[in-house]
Image 1: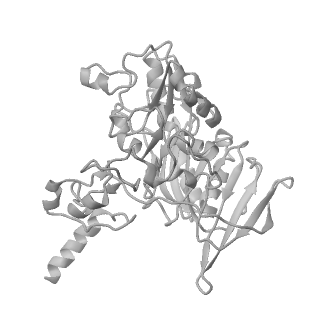
Image 2: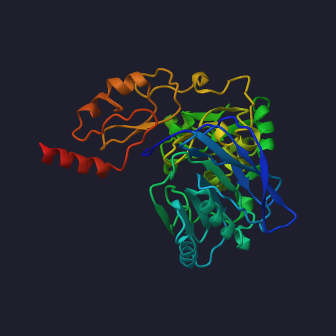
Image 3: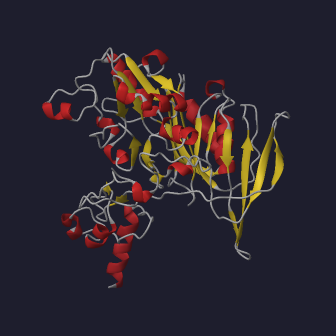
Length: 437
């Protein structure tokens, strides 16, 4: 896996309030001016019926070293509402929708036209089967795109998930284009019946998912993590087996034939008609896609976590969840508190907090790691994403193995939560050093 960077956490805050008007006069958005913590806590889920829980801002005052946070709280944001937001804090927005788009190239052009002049970076893919988007930007620009999208009846009730981006953009640039597959899977997904809801797994609300998890041990049920092994390594639901997968493209649950594959396949030898399959992933799209494949293979009782783990953490907190959540952007890892900073729930079976995540092991020596955040191998030509204890980081100079330490193109060891820049930046630096010598 190739990837990069940093986790975030929320600080406690205190209050005073004022009001912001919206297009719907019957709804007023309350905001609170908070101090003195320089901490962004932006967490929200948008639908026509879900609450907009919190959107916060921090801005340092260099003279007094004080911070003001604007936090918005309201009951519901209908699709007709305008969010008036003075914040320039950066957020990451994720959403997807399977819906027929007759002319996806024209759709791409419309989106590009609207985004012109907005500070948006990320990946937004469109095709005949719908849209899949993950992007970052100042909250004003990022939410303007959401509001514009929801004016289209096809996306009026789309579930939009938001998380904080404390270090600015979480993506290097904007990629908005037509793509044959909204997610990458061997053989593509254009032939799958994604537009037929009956072929996809039945979505479970976070509260129902939590209830089902508590009953797993007393029922004929399998908790299926439809992510990659390295994602499971830093966080997962109790009862979920680690996926023997390094890329979703090669996922093959339910079709194993060799003895080795069967041993690592949670769906091998299960009763397809009687076993309940509880599927989950980060935001939901991988489960929706793969559930159509399992349906075609004869699995009858398929359920998926609506909105994925991020939606669950925002609504239910870390109950039944262990560790952090891997995200596919520069932040790499987010603690549950990033999605619901006001939740103080601590599972009795496994207290949250880095020091208690005993399942996470160093890729090199196997010891327990205290920081649930991957790093890339310092060898540019390897770039492996792996968990590592600080001792091994020092001993192997940021590399994943002894062989990589002797590679010709090595990057410097990065301290803390820093991430590597693009590989060509180090190539140019190497050339400059040679010229200097």
